[in-house]
Image (cartoon, rainbow, N blue to C red):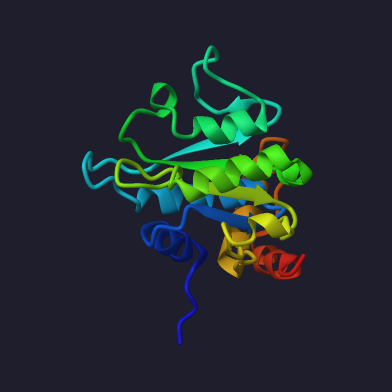
Length: 194
């Protein structure tokens, strides 16, 4: 039986109507690239446009949002995911909230997530704006466990690590150095499981 890829898993969950996904990983940049690939496969049925990705964290608030509407407050951020002034009335966005897990102990944060989930505020007949919780641990508050589906982010493959070695080689070539071509596979193999 073929294992479902992370991207397929995200697409399947969102297409099935899951409103809130938890992705535990410390590889934020690689995970965001994979989420972008998933978003390209999630088309709005009305507008025929790909799903956009919007990130949120407590340092910058939302990415790509008019500063006059932006917030760095987690509760406000969760509630604003449905705001047509920010995201349009019928546009689809994957709402990636990064590192909000320390705030799960705040009852207002839990209430905001649970309320939005209960009224289909993240995904409904007008738009899909699934909340994706990107954090380094798989821990979720017990009161949120019924709202959240966890998707594992797989370790990088040998081929992906070869790309990292090639990118590193390109970067150090600017400094006049290089990685011998015959060492690429050896380095990628050494990085597996790190």
